[in-house]
Amino acid sequence: MTLYDIKPRFQDLLRPIVRVFFIRGVTANQVTASAAIFSVVLGAVLMLFPEPRLYILLPVFLFIRMALNAIDGMLAREFNQQSRLGAILNEVSDIIADAALYLAFAFLTGVCPWLVVLVVLLSWLTEFCGVISQTLTGSRNYRGPMGKSDRAFVLGALGLFIALWPQYIIVANIVFGFSAGLLAWTSINRCRSGLEVGNA
Image 1 (cartoon, rainbow, N blue to C red):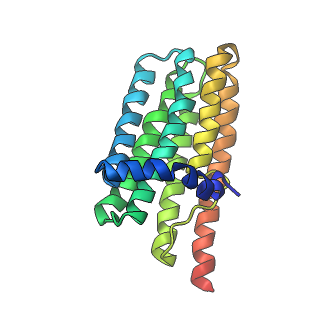
Image 2 (image 1 turned 30 degrees about the vertical axis):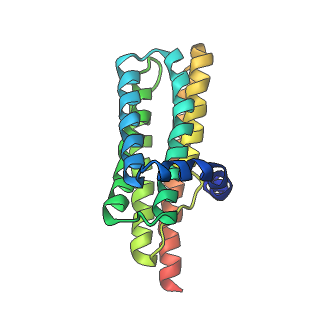
């Protein structure tokens, strides 16, 4: 069970916005690229100015990014904008955005940098395992417990916590350690899913 399971309801709320985007000529690839660019810009700002209170921007942006990720998929599927370039952009932009946003935590005093790097690398691994499953089964795997939306929720909440209570920043190391374990579990789950279908 992951936040990905509530995606259909979230998409229903976004559908009017998607129609407006389509009418105005906005393409799925433009939305995907914009989300990645904005992620890199915010990540760079947080790295250059590692002030805990600035991390209040993270949960706000991660929610916007989650909406943009849903919008680009809906534009592609519902308005015949699917393409090979779009598929590549979707996967590559996600790992770039994750790295830019989450590595920013490593610049905060009191946060263990290697734990942050470990979480980013394991985040990439979960996406890689999802793609491997797709090559084996023909369907992208989104098994949890720490998929893309779950990472955004956890680390967005951590950003909010750090902004409000910077004196307890040490808690971030516990969150990153726990997240690393869940990400490893997620990678195993996604690989097992591909094997189960392949052996069926």
